Length: 437
Image 1: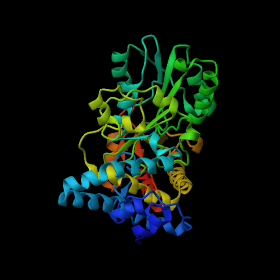
Image 2 (image 1 turned 90 degrees about the vertical axis):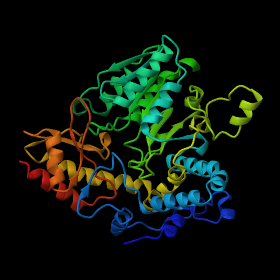
Image 3 (image 1 turned 45 degrees about the vertical axis):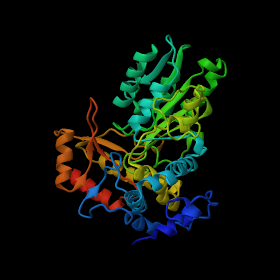
Image 4 (image 1 turned 60 degrees about the vertical axis):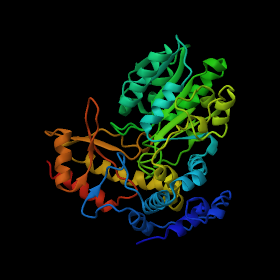
């Protein structure tokens, strides 16, 4: 059931930069990617074997915090041991290099240059850095919806207190009635001449709704054709619940600024995240936390020269942190390289479809997540009649099925099947829900 780390790394073309190479080899640039071996239906068991999850339960909570796959566990241990043995030398020799390796690897996965990637520790930090860093003027506004998460709403509130810009929440229509077109027009129709930023969530952690971000970005581009550069509408997206389970990159999404944690669907080291931007996004930003990553940061401070424009490196917070986790981020893509981004997305959708179909057939269950793949990803949210979501989750735990409650004004039960789950596990979870009738 095990697959060797080196076998996967060779398949992804990242052996020399994943931390397992000799120091001399590790200083070289990344080798050209070699074709992946064919991934077959029977290989899903080998994927599951990469995770150390207990076998006596069905864990469908990857959308909260991921278990580290084998390659990530090994990388963290390797870096941790080296830091314990020679902390100063290992830090000096590897910190900037390995952070840049991680940035390059994230960029390759998401279709952008590594220089356009900033490293953070979570979605929440990314939201704070983006919304606090935007160069907003009094009189400008940020447009968001009433269904976005606390982190978006609170980051925008705090940013507006500093900038003088206003925040306007619009009502999000019922996806079942509006469809993708209606959801798009509900946002585009509310954009005003003073709207500078549209702040949205790709996949909502409450209902599991996947917003039609590509269609929205296309409409915003059309509106921007007649706007001055300083007034063009920027699209910022909390993408954490699509990042790692959708076959989409930043070019397809079309947003200007994207932030996500990597310790969920990417299965990255806990305490890692990213902000990814386009040139227009970076030009509209200013860093918040001093960086240690930009090569001219210290020299500019010493010489007294003005700070340069915002970039992925400059937005990356400096400071001393859990370096072994940061450096192991590139190893999270070992499993994604092996399986392939499309097959990860297809598998996630298949498991979610199976779960949604089973729940929708139960008369005592109200499914909150759209059935269509166009409007959903991996999160499946529902209610059981006569039970609070907390009671339902507790009953599921009695069956050793691990779910969670969405912390919103309308709480919902969430089960989130991922590539570490199986169809049999989905069926077992459905059996547990049926027992609550």
